[in-house]
Length: 364
Image 1 (cartoon, helix red, strand yellow):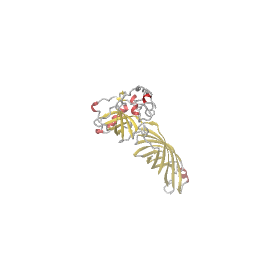
Image 2 (cartoon, one colour):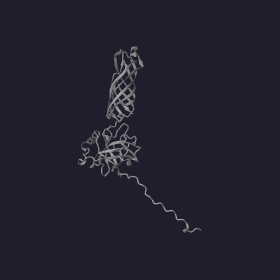
Image 3 (cartoon, helix red, strand yellow):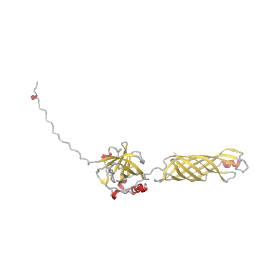
Image 4 (spheres, rainbow, N blue to C red):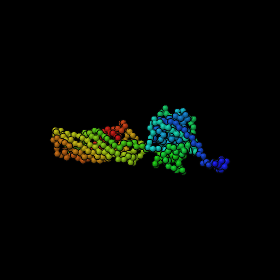
């Protein structure tokens, strides 16, 4: 049996050589707190937040809003109000399908407080207009000016380390990308925070595609002679939107094209004369194309054109000439007004060659 001292000595352990460490990244600091939306500009891109942090973020800071651990939108702070713990910020990027944040909604905000590079905050003309709108919205109870007339702080650039855990595959562009990976906005938009161009988001004034109308008025038709007469009638129409924002795509002025068909009913009595005792039940069928011009959500005008075909469905002691005259085909053309009276409901006024009357309209 070999003795321990006869066994060969184990080879010496190699000296540990420390591996070369990669270049250390600059320190990145961030803080998280909750915010609540108090107001929203008419452009729907600038918001007033109630900031629950002890110290509101400075002008130019970047905030990433999250809901249930999912990124929703990124904002750049335009103005802060220390005495009320409120901030005004504009959207610079959207994640997912959420287009507009609802007033009263609460979100978790991640603010980056240490930066790789600082950039000056540039307020566009739209930014100033949105700020002025939000400050004046409350009248005498509106927002105060910035405390002490402080100048805006330097804007914080984006950082890929902060955004890496929450950003859904940002498109890399080293020459222009922000450090947070928020260079790419919606398709067709550009980074407003860098080039100073205001791109106003346009949302449909009427997101519905179907129209149902019921009303009363006066319909045009012939009588005992080729002269036109008006008959009291009531009926319904159904329309479907063929296209929206065809020629006008502005936040407060938009257009749409609707294909519409309807049926009315009226009874013509004593058409030949006061003592003729003739009576006719007439059903006009109307088919038109209607072009709408909406000025905001509460008012619009329209013009339409098409045909109206009249059918005499029954009669009593009819006159042959009146029967032929009443079963006429006439042009349907005119215009009208739309007044919003409730969510999805409008009051419609028609003034046309074929029909003059008032209707109640449901959009859905």
